[in-house]
Structures are given as structure tokens and as C-alpha cells.
Image (cartoon, rainbow, N blue to C red; front, side, top):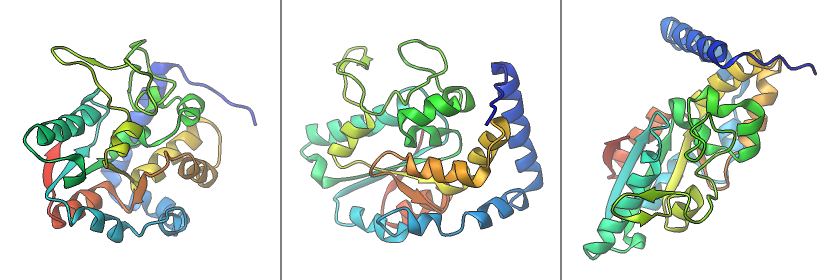
Length: 231
């Protein structure tokens, strides 16, 4: 299949126009794509979305970080700071229920490197590589190298998604945003929206749970006793 790449400015303008159109039209603009992908949540995840949140119920300290934009290192530095400062005050990571909701323009962080390169997600989501400062062609927070991230006054920090998962941090991603942006990617690459959506679901980082929507997940987390922090 022939692929046509748009210049960076055109790509961003195109995505912006799609987003503006979706906002103007309301949910009707995505109703058809959502119906085409019915069953994705149940068929591609081991956990039921509601049951997934039961894992935080028995934790002493609970928080949800609501991530809507890339925000450089903040979506991953803040959960790390939360764990470290709880540990410093007597609560181990196992005592903390930490949920990170990736939605809107932050959903790219839910995917493996191959999809970032293929679909130019750094440009799509305006996420720069921390090293090159250019639109990233990899997920910089999935299995980073030692010393990739340095915080002034603290030094090297382990804020990779895999490293946070090892400390019990739970990540989820918005299905509505995946539906919309995979359809955008289909238009930009002359592809099939349903096929690209399936490819994106297959390319999720292990352990990332698909949620009906990011706002649904953010509210469910609060219903399970999580304090809310917007990133």
C-alpha cells in the first residue's frame, strides 16, 4: 500500500482540524467508529475494567494521576515522587495504590516503540524525545536505559513505565481516544481504521488496561477511594 507522508506542520494542522471537528460535532462524530470496535475492551484484556480497579481497594494510600497531554516527564515523575515520599514517611510501595490514566493526547505512551516509529506518534501527540528534543520515534518511557532521566538535585531517576509497573503502578488507556486517533492515522496513511485500531490494541505495552474512556477511568478510580491529581 502506497504511503503519503505530510510535512510536520501539515500533519499537526490536519490532526487539529480533526480534533476541532470532533469537538464541534460531539459524540455523534465518534459513534460509528465506536460501534465498529465494539467488544475490543472485553476481547483484548484479561481484566474486566471495573474489576481492574478492585486491585487498589486494599491499599492504604490511593491516588489517580489523570494524564491528558505528554507533559514531558511529569506523567511518570509524579507517580515516582508519590512512591518515594510515601516510602520516606513509612509506607512501602505495596501499601500504595497508584493509577495512571492515559487519555486524550497522552495515549501514545501506552504503545510500544514500533508503533511510535510507524505512525510518527511523536508528531501526532506532540511528544518530543527527551534526548534529541525532536518529535520522538520511540516511546521514551518504555524500557528506558539507565541514566536516561536526570532530575536536578536528585540525580538519575527510574521513571520508565516498566519500572513503575514493577513497583505496583497501574496504567490504563482510553478506548475512545484510541478509536479517534487510529481513525486519524488511517486517513493520514490511506489505511483502514478498524485494522489500525486492532494493530494499536495488539501493540499496547503489557499490563496496560483498556478502559471504555479515560474520563470513565478517572471517575472509577475516585469511586475506589483514589485521590485525584491532574497532570
